[in-house]
Image 1 (spheres, helix red, strand yellow):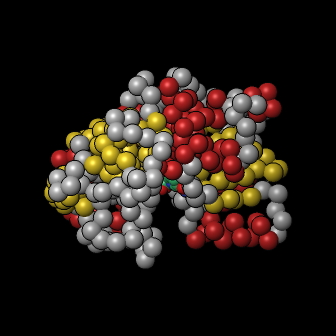
Image 2 (tube, rainbow, N blue to C red):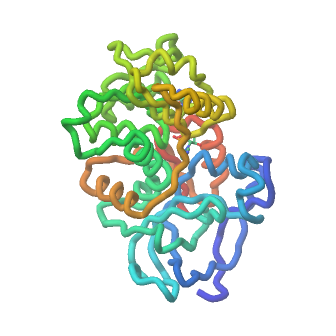
Length: 331
Ligand SMILES: NC(=O)c1ccc[n+]([C@@H]2O[C@H](COP(=O)([O-])OP(=O)(O)OC[C@H]3O[C@@H](n4cnc5c(N)ncnc54)[C@H](OP(=O)(O)O)[C@@H]3O)[C@@H](O)[C@H]2O)c1
């Protein structure tokens, strides 16, 4: 591959959204000893991609410019680094790249062997590429923070969970995983997605633009033991009256006021808590999610697919915040 060029999308500084994206031809990257070089078949976008471009995590992310955005991809291994033992050329894989480097919106990308897993033939590239950040976040919020053991179905059957934005990338996996664990699931979404979210398995759905939906009031009067909060702009005062005595709000995008609530609830030993959660991806969990998809127990819902040549359309869509499921870019 030495000297071979590939198509990619890059941006060269913070801000400007879609207008900041440029189509470039650059050298195919060389895998380091612990990396695999993947021919990308599909990449999926996450809100973090545009938030990083906007500079919301500066000065830490991205670590350098120009940067190729995108962390989630599926494809075929074409070369492996000298220390790689688990993969060989020709293997179908799914991988999660670091936010600091990105790299998925390109024809080829390098991924750490430690964050790459095999992809069985029953799992399409687009379905697999949707899983890393969104699926792992839903899984981590449920299993690590809420402490739910998905296979202990009897133990979970009286636990109530609310998923806000059950129609989005994270939310649509969270609803399905919570149901796999046999929890009672309430989810919020827009009116157009009420049926969709019910079909994912939610027991009760709330239109967030109605008074009851905005108040997060469960139609059956249930109080929530856990909230996986995938939406934004909902204050603690709205959650508080809907929580069970030891209810926990797991906030995936906490702003200053949520962080303040987190600190106050901790310091006052409050039984009701707000817990910020940032995903640290692990290959074993990604492997678990891929297996669930393979077994037909978890499905990826695709909002839209865009060729790399029209990556701007995908970027505009993720920035818009109204996707139903995942947005895919295909080289
Ligand atoms: N902490 C972490 O490690 C981590 C990891 C992944 C994601 N996140 C964060 O988690 C959040 C969700 O990510 P995502 O990928 O699921 O986003 P997404 O796919 O862009 O979410 C879009 C969905 O949210 C719905 N929505 C928007 N506002 C809503 C509201 N007030 N109530 C109910 N539904 C609402 C939209 O429905 P309508 O179109 O009907 O409005 C749409 O279906 C983002 O802030 C993201 O940055 C954090």
